[in-house]
Length: 407
Image (spheres, rainbow, N blue to C red):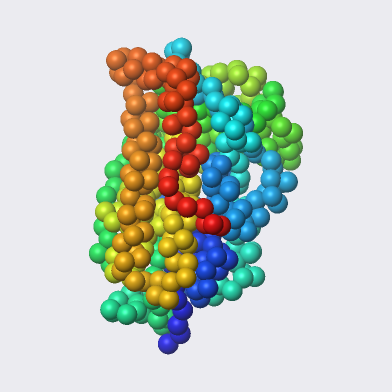
């Protein structure tokens, strides 16, 4: 039987960053059990995921404190968000946000999920993490003082704490008495990269359309061998399953025309589009984030709609809280530590879930009184400083009271 202080299940971006944070900022021994070929809840291997993610400003700070090489990714693709425009197609409601107004150098950074995963994995491979791959957990047996974990490789590990970072489809949480609620939004996210006629100037867009929310994030991708030069975007287009089926069946030029019609001409003409992928959207969350000698983090704890780009940013705050709680601990699985983790994550978790869920239901509805109310809300958000400041604090991650992992 082999031993370690902490055993993490899940070798995707969340598990890898958590392992790195624990190694960088605590004295605990860490094992990372990685299925490798396992896909996430959208059926995509994280090492091949074509999506990009918008890292909130606080997330950028926390990852940098953990030694994650974001500068390398920034050199490959700057992807800074300095301005955000939120609008409702066909209506007057609009909000404009400028990072300088809030004394920030940016609202965050847009990065390739696959590139970020590969960067962190490369670093954890060189750190003191015991990385076991490919391997899956077949059995968990908890006692008062430890957890015995059996792998499909035949290995048996004894640890003081097991952390589940294996996504929203894993049955392991239920095995330890943590149960999940799930609700489909009856929506599909269509993801692609585009090049536009005009430069993005580090501006991101959230556009609400009759078909669903449409996000354009500044990201200079390579399409058909041509690299964008300050005029590229990553697109997340939320539509109904029926609309998605129709859009995905269109030839590329017709798909581009439909996208142009929904987004408008703020960036001039959309000149090219990459291959398109799609995945269904749902809200799922566990009834608790801890059990006896067990924690759940990231998508294993909550899977959100991408409408406000909060999923990974919320997961990173999970990670920071775990690392802070385990600093200097001789027994990382002590119940008082896990209970305190649950208390610290409760408000941020509930507020972020409520924010994204409310936005989905408010802006995916064509009922006239609701349309009128949300446009009034957008106008208020644009002209009332306190409302705008509160919104920015929540979406950039600074509303949470979690302490910085570096301090």
